Image (cartoon, rainbow, N blue to C red; front, side, top):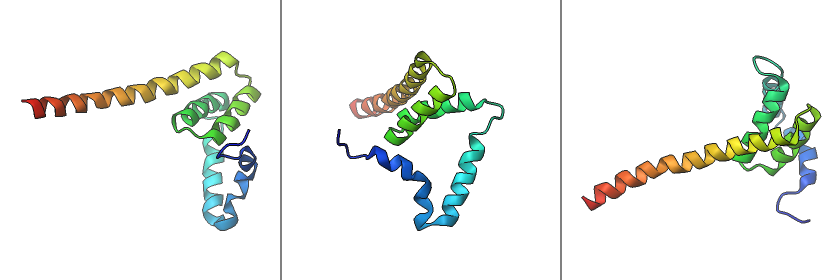
Length: 110
């Protein structure tokens, strides 16, 4: 299937420093530190990353963190719950802006 995003490009992510090595090194150092176990397990962080990948609609991240969560022992229902959490937050964020619309509507109609 041909898409705008080339799934093969995910494998090239590590080469992003080709046009700016210093910042890439800093990013990957930070990135790798973030995903180490801390107060949250690596498994929990991977599920969060999967949910965020859906919220920001990054197909590369969705592919990467679907694989990563499965490798870390997550079950299919856990992956789907993570996606639903992201959907609920995105939907809620849209709906809460409805208050702004209601305020503006009331202002214009009064």
